[in-house]
Length: 280
Image (cartoon, rainbow, N blue to C red; front, side):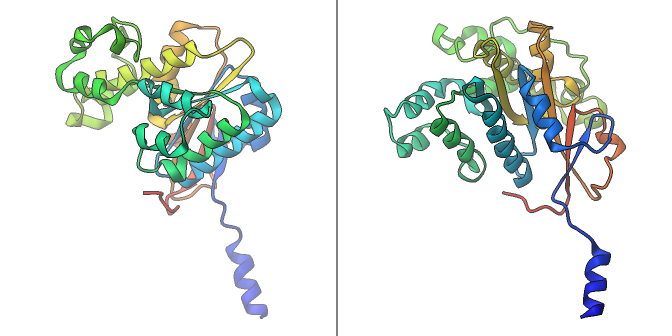
């Protein structure tokens, strides 16, 4: 028994995550909650298949609701703008959960990773905003260029950012997607532009649904807001006065300290063990 206890103590705890500030100093979760309650927009960058990301998204949402109540609004990349009417009808009790899930073009991991957020918002009387451009239009930009958007109907144009789209193609994240930087030749201008229309559309719908003295918590892939680019860039361009809190999620072999490459990615960085179970 003594030998067993000695081995157990030497192994120590197995934390599921460590929270750091932007410079790599370990941070307290309650400090993150406080900062989030004071922000206009919280951009929660996730790793799509990481259960700790999704658990912390839910926990932070619940804690924010406990602090600010109905002044909280939710939004997400995972829902496309032309599905907003379906979301609203479900929240109003006009359609069943079955029909909502059947018609909403949900991601494959919806039931495990995003449904808890949707149901919490619905049960709490909060709004949930579908912020992403419909994927068919992003795909058209990727394959045929930004000019393809100008041929869309007036109705279709309500599901995206205003045209024409103007953005800084020299941002680090966009250079990489265009085939430069660390991605080398794997990107393309079409991929960069498709990413930009997603980022710009999400920023557009965040701003459109952000009321004074409210906080929107927005869930998106970390690459849509890392290094204060992507959605953050479009939000700040539109309204420099916005108080935006960014969160990123990273995967590391060792989470006792933040790897140098992961510092400065966001205001708060969630480091999760590389060995963590994936949701898909």
